[in-house]
Amino acid sequence: MALVGSDDDRRVKKESAMTEPAWKNAGQKVGLQVWRIESFKVKHWPKEDYGRFYNGDSYIVLNTYKPDPSSEKLAHDVHFWIGKYSTQDEYGTAAYKTVELDTLLDDVPVQHREVQSYESDRFMSYFSRFEILKGGAASGFRHVTPEEYKPRLLHFHGTSKAIKVNEIQLDRNKLCPEDTFLLDKGLSIFVWNGPEANKDERFKAMQYAQQLKSERSKGKVIMLNSDEHDTDFDETFSGENDDDDDDEEDEDDRATFEKTLFRLSDASGSLKFEEIGKASQVHRSQLDSKDVFILDSGKAVWVWIGIQASAAERSNGIVYAHNYLEKSQHPYVPVSVLKEGQESAEFGTAISA
Image (cartoon, rainbow, N blue to C red):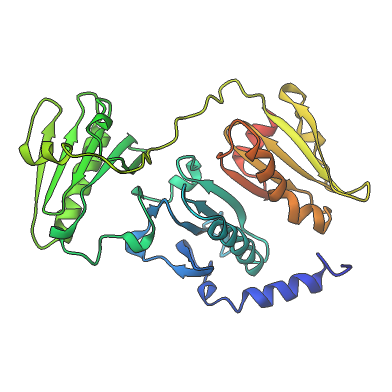
């Protein structure tokens, strides 16, 4: 155990990470890379599907960039994304492999946990489109003809900054006046605009429909306003609906949450997790290089790792954050792991406000 966290230990772990085929060329140049977890394996996700996620899967997303355009030095953010119906084995593998990728890149990346429907602004900024579809990647539509498509209903919601596209239950009652919806029947693609839908939602849905049409050898796009009817459209909703309701979770009320700071330390001989400040009692001066701290703002959680923190404290920080969140009123908020000296602007605002 004396070697845990030592230079030799890190060297061995890096050598092990270098044997993972999926990590070849990972993080070597500016850009985005995405992988999906499949049977405990890391598989490259096709570039044409970047921004498309299935709620039964887990993914790893690496963003590589230059903080200083005049320098060749690269920085990274590595995220693992957990679909609502991803298995514990899948997201456990994604979490483990995220740490492995961090090791391969010499501990430079900032690690993040993302949960479906609670994605961070940073994560969303990577994608010009962001879709969540039902099932796993194997249930995709690429290898079947349009005539064989099972109808699916997509919900477009947001602004130009971030339009989210979610596949939802095929239920006419889901057509709310505030948003735009797309009914994909393979050969017929309907865009239904609620009277209060904004121009960004309308534009993104139309753009999406035209893209679907261009990918198929035939088909048509039909625009519908809420007061218009189409027999083909209406009949899609006339049968019994046996689908599970897989819509987005309702937003929890986090407006009244008071930010809270916790310390994780093994100075006593065993790991101890304790609250050390709340609301106005939370100060940057409480951070100690010898320990790990967890800051919960209610909308995000940061695991801050001091440069002198022990190996046990370092490796257990995100575990304690995950266990804490499971018992909280907001279990799905984004989690970021920051090393001392690597603090993000968002963390700086939260800890000093």
